Amino acid sequence: MSAATTRSRTPDRLCAEAVDLARTAAEEAAAPGVVGEHVETVVEGDRVVTHLFECKEFGYRGWRWAVTVARASRAKFVTLDETVLLPGPDALLAPEWVPWSERLRPGDLGPGDLLPTEADDLRLEPGFTGEDAPPPNSPVSEEMAELVEAEYIADTEDAEVIAGPVSDLPVVPTRGSIAAVAEELGLRRARVLSRYGLHVAADRWEESFGAKTPMAQAAPATCVSCGFLSPIGGSLGQAFGVCANEFSPADGRVVSLAYGCGGHSEAAVMPKPVRPAGPVIDETIVDELPLRPAADAGSVGAVPEGVEDLGHS
Image (cartoon, rainbow, N blue to C red):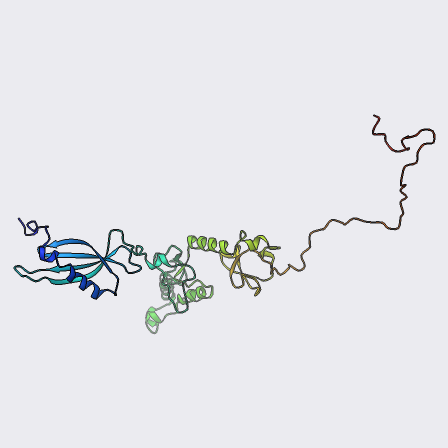
């Protein structure tokens, strides 16, 4: 039977009674007044006991000061082992660690900050850099260069009269010309936006400066007809542009073509809604209205001519 199984879980009497020693050690390690009542005594092993005290420090609710004391075999004095602050079963703990890549939010990047992108970032995909080999039938491929050299030698009457090594023979342009053209077209990038990267960017821009925003709902027209809209290239240019109106809330921002604001370039000349014509009062004609209807001389209470008798149907 191993020694671990023969250890008694009954606390050593002298170690269990060393509460004052443990409290003094906890108060020396902690700030004044934050060590509370004695909570529990835990047996760690033979003649090794840990005394737990309540922690009253703000921000550490449920934590406990743990002071471990020990006694050597056949010794009459208890010695201090260690003093630590440990969380209890209902302690207030920090949230689970989240990697920085998941905690990062738009706007967190400040001046001088560097944000590396991972090799498998879903927002990016490999782009054309000019480093990949051209097709075999390309005039700048190695196979085509060797073919040109062979034809040049075959057309010569005597190959031995050719001065210099074969490497000095005229060859087609080098691959650098393709790289130069690619750089001119903006294609020499290691990675470009993937379809997923395009979609998430479009959704983010549409939410900030899209057609469903309160500003766009109250705008006189959309950005597609605004003179302050600066177009952008690529596939995103079919739905977005850059606002160049310094008085617009979207100045310098990527906006949807369906977005709009009160700073539209044609807002001042846009036709206003037609208002109904007001009532016309002609003050040049006088209408004669009698104060009381004329009574018929033959009958009292007769109804005047042209007035319907509502009392006799």
